[in-house]
Amino acid sequence: MDIINKFKENRNEENSKSMKKYMKDKFEFLGIKSPLRKELQKEFLKGIDKNSTIDKELVKYLWDQEYREFQYLALDYLVKEKKKLQKEGITFIKELITTKSWWDTVDLIDSHLVGQICEKYPELVDEYILRWSQAESMWLRRTAILYQLKYKEKTNKEVLERVIKDNIEDKRFFIQKAIGWSLREYSKVNKEWVRDFISNNNLSSLSIREGSKYLD
Image (cartoon, rainbow, N blue to C red; front, side, top):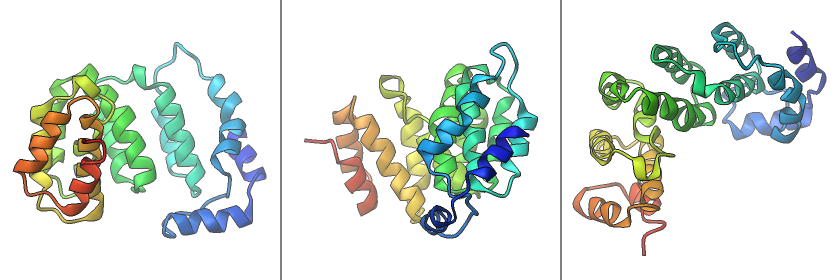
């Protein structure tokens, strides 16, 4: 595949070391920083047939590649095509959340892909999100907390409250940070609700600090 070769031809060993270190040595990198990667993949993404369905095999192929830049490419492709997501795509998205998991991919999946598909098919909230909120996987829990991040006034307060309360006692950094982040974003459109929620619940100091950022 041309895009694979194009990425590999632009590897940068120095960048690779620093990018790998930044991601806690969890993944191998070619060392292609975001601006160059976006430029290299521009023609590839531009060539996607507007009338085609989402190519899950392409996504899986890219996800299976050794270098992290290919997972980023897969997500950029999916974000570009997200309006084509169908209800059954939630199980495919779950695979991506729980495979090669770290905040750099999961957070993009949460706010763009899961947010999109649950807005289109609200029944998925009961079927999946509320179960993910209590899942063994930390990343599924984080997804349940963050999927409404871009909803603003459309945020379902009852769901937000439930998924946060499901995870208040989970002291892991990525969970407590997600709680604070979700409250902070919602406070941009509903300060009073967020202020009351913080006052009436035993949140961690991290969640309170994050969630209070835009409160008076």
